[in-house]
Length: 249
Ligand code: NDP
Image (cartoon, rainbow, N blue to C red; front, side, top):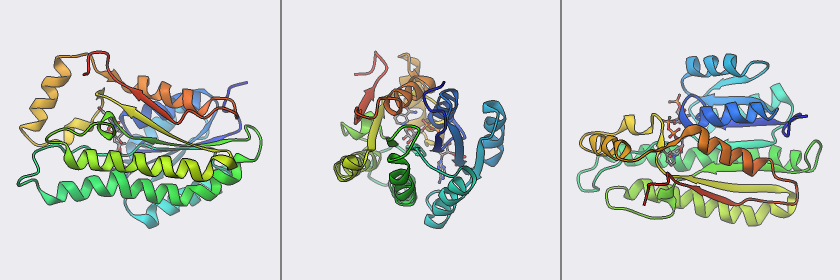
């Protein structure tokens, strides 16, 4: 029997990178997957790859109505929610002086507000699943970043969003842990995904150079950390995992 048999796991930003790898890894543990992102075509391909009964939900989770509808659809189709991974995110780096305000708004919308929308809509379902079979516990995992632990020049608003979700996760953890809902934070360092493809120049070239001069994490490395977190025994809560490329300072 796989460790997540009989459970449902919802992953935001499942259309690429860490979200996609996490969905594959959770499905391999037996979870039924609900795949959420805007690019439906990518989600359909992933659902076919996972096989079975994965549910595809096209949604922009920065819109509270779409986030809530995605969660309702997940519960309507699968009957429960045991694991939620708040993964969708954007990283738009550059100096604050003359930065396009739109980039700041977008990071706050995806990295913070969407996490709040999905968390708000999923909490009642996660709490309901926490007390029931097969595990007697449920998991809310947010993908933060090493940028949520240390601020750096040129990364201020990305830092703001990732420090922010870390603070929210810790406060929420204290609130719900006695009800067997575990709230965890995964903080990856540089990972080979599409994330840096949204950067403007010269930040894009700088990031490409950074990735050329060290061996980055693969999305599957981060997915393994999520799986470790959500497959612990009911008595054990892993609240935080920081995972860096060995060569990253
Ligand atoms: P990707 O760009 O590969 O994936 C980002 C995902 O977020 C996509 O699936 C995208 O799907 C989804 N997304 C973006 N905006 C929205 C939206 N409005 N509604 C729904 N989904 C959305 O990057 P990563 O896999 O690297 O990023 C995943 C998370 O990991 C992010 O939170 C990021 O900050 C974090 N992280 C990444 C690191 C890295 O080096 N790669 C390091 C540390 C943390 P779609 O466009 O289809 O909507």
